[in-house]
Length: 623
Image 1: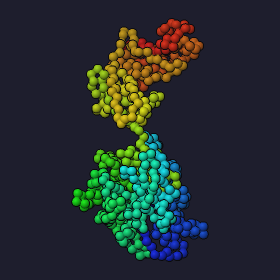
Image 2: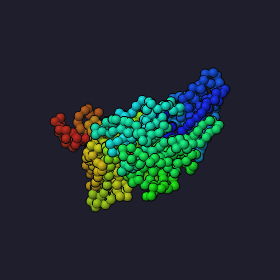
Image 3: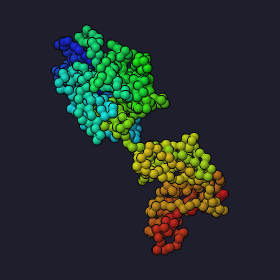
Image 4: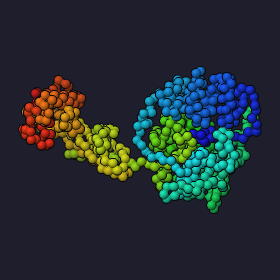
């Protein structure tokens, strides 16, 4: 995405001249002045005139990378990497390939990157899990994403909702002069009305915050009286001089403003900004005690990291703290958003394993675990960033260039229920740890399976208003299924009480409930498996026992067909028992066809009688 680069590079430029020189000097001058549109034109002239070198190809590729033109970037990285390049070039090439959905080719470049920079955490993550994309694509859908009616034909991003006002950053102001990096107007902070019907109207610039340079995004205190926002340090005449390139280098910095009637005043340059680094994209915790932000300040792990700083009761600030390698990588992390609970942090990263470009991640800072990629449709092969969420209205926003331009999208949570299954002994009530627990949809397709913990619990997240079925099994107990009723959540509980296996064993037979088969089929059903598990337990308890299984059919179909069908059923039964750890020498079987009906009803059998005749019997050959 285009303007994300501006936000991440954190450099504002003022220059006085552009020297014209031979070969790459003119293009390099534009590149160093962040005039990427014009720089690309100059490098392309060199290609057209037969003056291209590996350096020109790499500069062209990096130019398009900085503008997130992934198609052109891939084209020129392919040329550049015909010769050996530095590790970061391979990484960038891999990212651009991934942004075009070319995951296999991306992995090849990531392997080159990993070889060139083996100690880089991005390389280590790739080596540990090189085929991570299918896992990301299979993640449970957490949010629905829809276009918003606030986006324009210019870059729009960083939307955040406070009460009924939506603040965002945009380059739509046609009265502003263009910025050379992307040939778009300078960024402004906008405010729009968020209406009861979900429409967004009346977008207008927040003039009391905007300067003639880049401004935005912002974050607001819970009482609505204080904002922190990004802006160029030029507004305070704070910059460095780059004499070599005839530049004045400003830095994106964080400013504080307080409510002054219907506008904002007392604009203050914060003390932890700096001339040598940039500070941007603030997010204020709801308790007002912590400000999160992006910065490439000293101590950063990568190019841009996420930091935090405490806000003291007297209005002073603590020392900025890097959020560490659970959040930050050697790549770039930006656009932090701290949720209302003051624990869950959302942020964008180009350094973690994602679907392409920048992906959005979530981490619970109170638990110290790993950051979680939000998966599709929040993330795509393109740049996705600027996540925010209003818990009161249960709605959020993201920014993405998935449509070719930086646009704002509406985020609505997928209604979900956390279903907790507790597995117990039905007779004693005792907790059953290490029980197998699967959750199935209403068509009995298994969605996922886990073992119960030491509390006998397994928790699954499922969609609202859909029925599910839980299947629970445990050695020594009868497996069973339990209905999960439709629910709007947020939580539901299922008591999965399993009966201890108590099987009738006579001198000649192990008596089970009928192992029924579906009409014309020989596969073991779930209900049949639960019964066969009882036989498995009996045989494990009596390690000398040998069983002969007889399978029967109903009388529909020819005698030959039924004999073959019953033989397949007998073999299925035997194979199931063996699969549960019983030695093959202890179980055998034979199909009897329709020769020994349980109910001799001739041609007038009911469906129930036919089902009774489709059965298995288990004769004891040896105890």
